[in-house]
Length: 112
Image 1 (cartoon, one colour):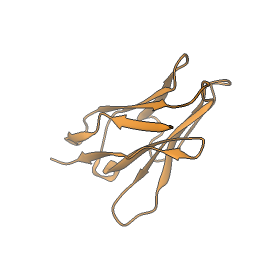
Image 2 (cartoon, helix red, strand yellow; image 1 turned 45 degrees about the vertical axis):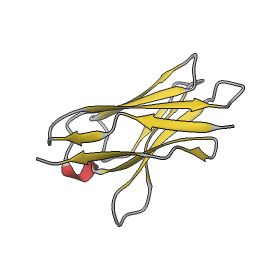
Image 3 (cartoon, one colour; image 1 turned 90 degrees about the vertical axis):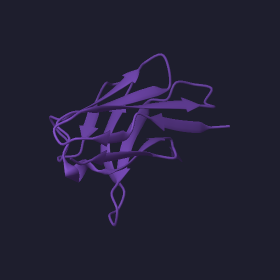
């Protein structure tokens, strides 16, 4: 059974940092591309970052470039999202995604 489980969300002050983790289980192979999405209240889900394990190529939303870094454990189906210089606009539920499967999401709230 395929399962993606995120962790690491929480409440952080503006300018702070958080590191999200995602563990994908139930796959019999190492996934090439894994991604992070987020959905803020009243807004559509949007791609935050994506990484191809095979090529190393990454994609970032313009709003997070230079602040967020996506990474993988290349031997495992695990990915991470290091989020720095967080601001209120980063408040959202963050989802891990791979091959059409989604995690349940982890809440990130940026507030003083």
